[in-house]
Amino acid sequence: MQKREQLYAGKAKSVYLTDDPDHLILHYRNDTSAFDGEKIEQLARKGEVNNRFSAFIMQKLEQAGVPTHHEGLLSAQESLVKKLDMFPVECVVRNIAAGSLCKRLGVEEGIDLEPPVFEFFLKNDALHDPMINEYHIRTFGWADDEAVAKMKELTFKVNDTLTRLFADAGLLLVDYKLEFGRFRGEILLGDEFTPDGCRLWDAETREKLDKDRFRQGLGGVVEAYEEVARRLGVDLS
Image (tube, rainbow, N blue to C red; front, side, top):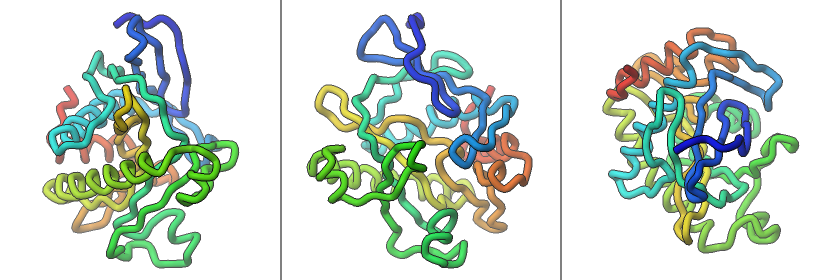
């Protein structure tokens, strides 16, 4: 579908309108950012790796019964997706303690969380994506109770599916964030699922294979993403 105009440019993706009002094009750029855009770099191949990685994961989730916005790959760095009316919230599941959870609660990184922790965050860069709860969502009209319940249900279904998928590849799914929206009345998983938006560790060594390599200046960011993709069987050619 031919691009007409850019609708939105995020930190790592650009979104384009198509001739079909029900579909958009996601262009995965090589931009990499952290700390609400305070640290930004261009990393060769990253856009292509993330595009193919997210397409692979979305297809696996569809097979597991999680409806997504993904329609198909268009090129190395672009995918066709359904145009969703997005909810301004992020759904986060934490299977192992890491990141902001450790800072907020003073817990040690690497502790297994049983049961997994579910959290909501408001998608607002200017406010640094503050943590919220279901009362905030209801009071401010960000989503109705039915949508909240469905997002939680689907988020845990994603967790069941992907923890097994990554475990089979010798990886730990530490935590991740998801975004949802409506399409013709149905709630679908939107945005992306890549190492930019989740934490993945090697199951034996606990080496970090996600965007924490960029946040913490560990180097080898794209190489780590490619290693994860290789283990999963993602076609990067």
